[in-house]
Length: 178
Image 1 (cartoon, helix red, strand yellow):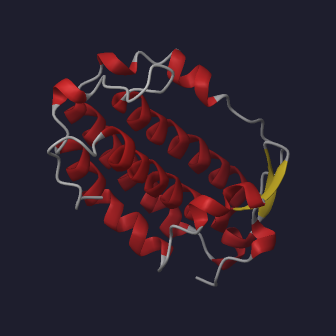
Image 2: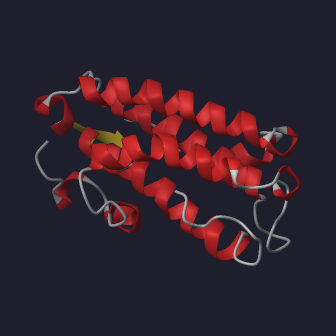
């Protein structure tokens, strides 16, 4: 795949994209196993833990990662298939508030992520250079299909760093995973 160019995505995604330091497909594939292992390393009783009152719980963060991957992949599919219909934004806080995430089991979240990413990798691997280079409007921003792959990988990296540094730093959790 050709390298990602700065005109393929809005600057708002720089922090996510910069966490992808090698081949994006390698990161996406590595996350397929390392992220479920990371989730499995978190005890079930910590799932509803928040490091501050106004923050999401661990399970809410995990579900947010899954929801965002679904949405970004949907956008990549639309643009990859040359559907240039402008796509609306999504309100992440509403998704979290209405998801009943703390009722979920950590093991189910790990499995859901694994199967979602596995299916998404089939789609991502099916895109050719022309499809990857296609751009469309999502959330009033011009973005390429290729950029979505980096955003998906980087978004997960971003939230794992937050989970490790703010939620799990004082817990006895294997922070080498993910």
